Length: 334
Image (cartoon, rainbow, N blue to C red; front, side, top):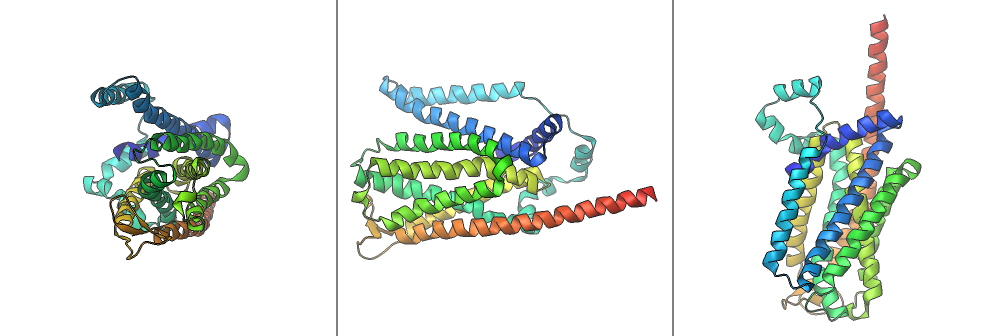
């Protein structure tokens, strides 16, 4: 949580300097950096997912695998020493000195409560969270078990790696495409991917009818949607909100909160008799999967509508600030 929150201000600062150096807009710089960051991040996730599979096949024990992960984490922390450390500006120092510890610790919550734009952005984070829960609790655990006779979860690592790989590739593609098509179109593509993922299972609910090729499509759709969440959405937050740490903190807070709620719903949405949409899980309980699928699809629709409303509010605020700047400039000249 601390790392992702700190990323907000660092990401914005780097984007501003790059925009000035290349004579491009802040929006284009944040979109490019967001895509490159997500591409690197998701590519490394693929490597880390495959690390355990490869090491175990070479005869490593799980203890040795986790020692390997620990060494990688320590090396990553050490490499942060070589990351450029931006000096704190005078304005930032004054703001830090004037803010209490309590104020700083509650800045994320206050932004969500006080800034109307943030409320409309919540469905974007919620859609990714709910789709991830659907993949984790239903597709990974039940669909693969039935469709591919995978009781030992042998396909989970490979298929989730495909999802991360697609996400990494699409993140870079979206980063370069954003200046041409805009962030709005890319975020709509992400929401459509999450919508289609759930719609496929709603349309073809018989688990035995699924095969490896159709499931690869599902994981690819999740990867496309995740690419927009990890890259374009964060780039948009960096542009739309002035308080970068609070904005990025909201992404993590909203995603974590909705994910927790999603897991609770996935466990509690029960039904009485086994049917097409009332599926018996490996734990012996009957789960109503249709309700959860409709929830993901509804969230995707609300995400698009909410984002459009947030952009309207942002443009209105931007116009007001520009008008104030012009008036202040004229007053100064007078």
